[in-house]
Length: 110
Image (tube, rainbow, N blue to C red; front, side):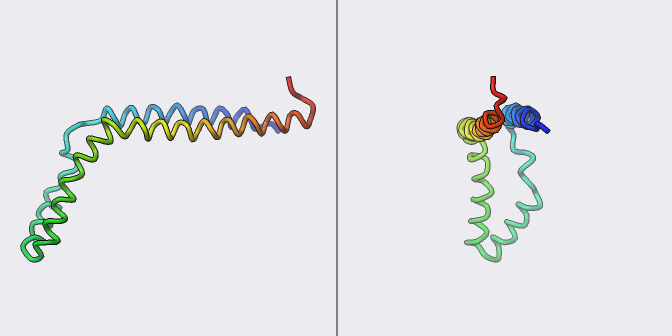
């Protein structure tokens, strides 16, 4: 049974889906309304009243999410996408080399 062509098509589809996924993530909503949770902010406020240092730290961590998300969306996502696509391509290249080696041993190249 020759499973190499099916595996190659599957990895090629994975590569195409990864590219589409990164595009959708970059084009997603730019507002932060889905991340701001009023219950969470209320809990942070309560923590700040009883343990000011911890509460302020949690609040700053909460606020720091948006700049990191914005930077990822505008800058870092392209590096992540490239690395992801390169990883899948290396798998496809290894599969080609392995299939070629097996077919060469069987005398069926060409």
